[in-house]
Structure formats: structure tokens, C-alpha cells
Image 1: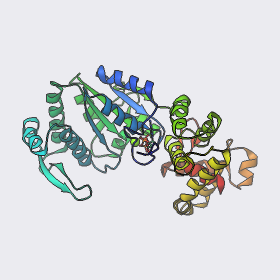
Image 2: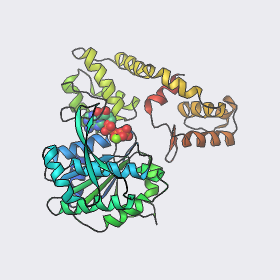
Image 3: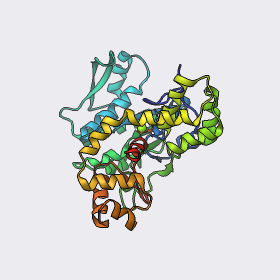
Image 4: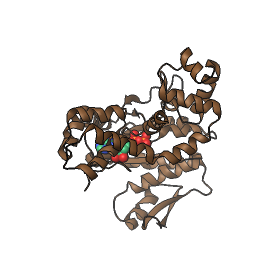
Length: 358
Ligand SMILES: Nc1ncnc2c1ncn2[C@@H]1O[C@H](COP(=O)(O)OP(=O)(O)OP(=O)(O)O)[C@@H](O)[C@H]1O
Ligand SMILES: [Mg+2]
């Protein structure tokens, strides 16, 4: 098993760090409290929740990721599938249990040609969205009589894109009904997420906010030095260049391990690998950049290369007015290329490094 895995989620063998964070979220699960887990992209939210699911075998986790939903029925389908998947036993045992849990929704067994496995798929014909959700929660309430439950919804901010129904308001109604279930909401788009939990919004005060930072330096050092001959200072250098983005750090380590597992790692080796990772994305980033208007191109370059965006010298260098820079930044924000906290930033560190190298 390779120690560094930067695609998909960290697995039992590749997961490291997050000791305190796992204690924190476990406490919430045990007390049936709700959590809103936020972090920047690729910092390790999903890996952490998956690790918690592995470890906390006394609790039944209903995990689903709604990144791809385009309608309320997609949400209902993923929710129902996750509940069905959480049932124990073989497919025929599960099929016999489901009618006891669901009064309206029925399930079909379908063959998934990509995985070669059978899956359960809910049939939602002739059932309204509200009825499907009611069925889902009734099933959860029945299950929670026997076991503690955690419902974990990944990329939760996507519910705000569904305009036909207010999924958040509907969830609130059921979340208030039963106290033996925790709800974990995970996501990475801060403005969209916090909007769902803002004052007077249906989910206001329905979950404790928990911001996931990068993995701790000591944990990086302990894990990475098990596999690589690398000094503490160079590990700090990798973390700095990656701006703490877990995926990029693990990616760099994975290449170091492939090629230099037994050698002393130098700064030169590290910098060459970073350059290589950035260049491997060159064609897709170029295509993206070429699709920008002139104003957006300038705004993107300024953001990659300058801290003080509105300084006169910067604006002069790029021949752009403060006003049009601001409107181009807003346009990039709408396109989800850049994000905004206290300041504007590029959430994809590799893209930012590419922009710097242009
Ligand atoms: N604790 C960890 N130990 C080892 N690798 C990790 C850890 N956390 C994250 N990673 C690695 O970093 C990458 C990104 O992690 P993950 O997908 O869990 O982050 P995320 O915050 O859910 O990202 P996204 O915002 O894209 O949903 C994964 O490939 C994973 O292998
Ligand atoms: Mg994720």
C-alpha cells in the first residue's frame, strides 16, 4: 500500500493527523448535536468524516454527497439511497427490510456496470418530493430507536442552488422532531454555507460551526518522515508553498516517495516537483484562462501576483481602473474561479501557482 494518496479520499492506510478534530466531532456525534463543518477546498473534510465513520462503529452514519444535484429529486434520491445503503446484510435481506422502513418509496435492485456491483435505487414516480423526504425521515426515526444516528451531508451548500423548494426549511422541520440524531453539514463555499445558517434563515442556530484548518505541522512531520528522508524545514516549505492545501501537500509527497524514497530530499527536488505538478495542469488552466475576457484576465493575474490589489502602481501596470478591477473580480467570483473571505483569494492553490508562473 502506498503511503500517500492524493486522489479520492484518504483511506484507513493513508489517513494521518486530525487527532483532536476527530475527538471533537466524535463528541458531537455522541451527544447527538449538529455540526456545520467548513474548510477550504481539498483540506480533508470528506476524508475526515469517512475516517470517523470507520472508527465510530457504535453509530450508524448516513453519509451522502450532494455536489452534483441539479434538482430536489436528486437530493431525495441520494438521501434515500444512503439510508438503504446503511442497512446491514446482503441485498435480499436489505430488500426485505426496506418496506418496513418506507411506506411510500420503493426500491429496485439495479446493476451498476461501472462498478460491477448491484445497487439499490429508489423509485420516486408518483411521489412528491415532500412525501419522499417524509418517508426518509420516518425511516431515520425508526432506525434511531435502535441505534444512534448521524446524517452527514457533504457539499451541503448545493441545496441553495435548488430554487423550487426550500430544502433547508424542510430539513429544519424534521431536525427539530427527533433528538437522537446528529446532523453534520459539510462544505467548502463559505459564503453559500454561512448564508444557509445566517440570522433568520431556517437553519439559523441549528448547528455549531466548526472550521477545519490544515493538518498540524507535527502530524505532517511525524507521518512524512516515516517514509521520506526530509528535514522539518523542508516539510514546512512544502506546506507553505501549498498554502496548507492537504491534497497538494500529499501529492508532492507522493511523487517524492515514488522517485526519492531513499534519497535525502533537497529544496531543489521539491521545487522541481511543484513546477511539474503545476505544468501538468497547464493545458486545462490555459483553456480556462483563454476563455476569460480581458478584464477577467487582468484581475486574475493581479490576484495571483499582488497582495495590495488596488495600489496605484498595480492598477497602472495592468492599465485597469479600480472599478473595472472590482467588477472583473466579481465576475470571476460568480464563475467560482475565485472566492472571498476578508479578501479575495484563489481557492485552487495549484491554479494560483500556475497564474504566478505565467
Ligand atoms: N487526514 C488526511 N490524511 C491523509 N490524506 C488526506 C487527509 N485529509 C485529506 N487528505 C488527502 O487530501 C485530498 C483531499 O481530501 P478530501 O477530498 O477529503 O478534502 P475535502 O475538503 O473534502 O475536499 P473538497 O473540498 O474537494 O470536497 C485527498 O486526496 C486525501 O487523500
Ligand atoms: Mg469533500
